[in-house]
Length: 508
Image (cartoon, rainbow, N blue to C red; front, side, top):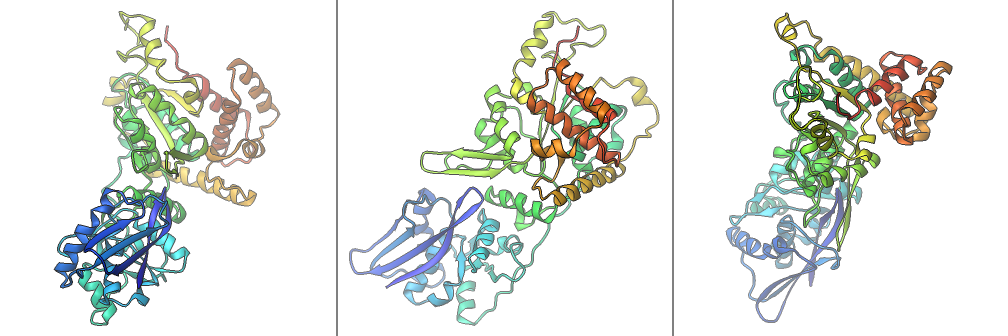
C-alpha cells in the first residue's frame, strides 16, 4: 500500500505540486528517497527518523521507499521533512491518510519533533488555495499563510505530536490570523535636508511617477541622505502589491515571524555585490536584490564602483520589470518592477567641476570614472540631476523645509490620477514609468508648442527612441502633479532639463 501527501516545489514564486509517495514493504531494511532530491532533502530521512522517535513512534524494520513525483523535477530545501513524516505516519496507521488528502504540507523537522520555519509558505498557501486544498505549515509561518485566503483551512502546529493529536480529535488547532510587521520606527523626513531644493523637486517627481533617478555630486552633498528619504514620500503598498512583494520575500526567507509589511521595499546593496546577489542566481536560482526591491526602490550608492557587468545585468529588469534566471535544468522568473535610484561622484576624486578645484589627472579622471557606466544603462534612467555641495548659509539658517508628509500627499494625489487613468484605459501599468510606448504617446500627447519644443530638443540632444518616450513619461508626471490633463510646453521643458542638463560629462 502507498500513502500519499501533497507538498510543493518552487519555480520562482510559483508553487508546483509535488506528490510525496511512501511505501513500506518487505526487503532489506532501508530508508530511500528518490525523485531528484538535493542534499537537504536526502538528509531529511535522519531528521524524520529522530522526530518520529521523539514523538513516540519508530520506523518498522522494513524497506521504506519515498518517491517525490514528478521524478524529473528537482526537489530542493528542507520543507519536505513534514510531508515525508506525515506520509510515513499514514502508512503506519498513526494518522488517517484520508484527512491528509485535503492539505498541502510543508515544514522542517527538528530532532525533538518540533517544526522549524521554512521559506516559501505564502506562495505555497496561494498554490494550495488555487487547487482547493488547505495548508499545514509550522506555527511560526501560520500568520504568513493566513494572508492567502481568509476562508482557507490552515493548520499551524508547533510539533508533530500536536498535529497527530489534532487528527485524532484529542486537540484542536485554531486557525492562525494574518499579521502585519511592526512599522520599525519613523522614516527619515525630508525636512531634515537643508537646501537642495532642486534635488527635492526631482525626488518628488521620481516618487510621483515611479521614475529612475541618478544624482551626481561631490562627496557630502547629501545624495545618500536624499535617497534614504524617498520611502517617506512613497505611498504604501496596495493589497495586490503587498502580496507580490511578500511572495518574493517569502521564497527568499526574509519574512520575520510570518509578518507582512505594507512599506515599500528599499534595498541598498554594497557596491561589492556580485551579479548573482544583484539579479539573482546561485544553485537554487534565488531572487536577487532587484527582485527583493519589487514594487519598491533599489538604491545603488557609488554607482561606478559596481562592476560594469553587474550594472549591465540590470538592463533587462529595468526594461521588462522581470528577471529571468536560466540554469541547465530549469528556468525561473521573478517580478522586478523597481524604481532605480543611483548616486555617484563626478570623478574618482569627487570634486570635478567645483570652483577652485583642479585635479592632477585633468579631464581624464572624470572621463575614466564615468566610462564605467554604459550608455544603454544611462538611457534607462529618466531623471539625472546634479547635486551641488551644501553651502554654509544653508546649514546655518533656520530650517523651514517642507516635511515628507506634505510631499507624500502630492505624490499620492498624482499616483491616484495615474491609477484611475490606467484603469479606464484597461492598462496593466500602475505608474507613468511603467507605461508602454504606444500608451504613453496616447496619454502624454503635448500641445502644439510642446510638440515643437520636443522635436527641436530630440534633434539637439540626439534622443534615442527610448529616451524620447521617457521624456514623455516624466512630462506626463509633471502634468499630473499640476493636476492638468494636457501636457504643456513647460512640462516638456522641465522633463528635458532632467534628461540633458545633468548628462555625464566632464566639467570644464
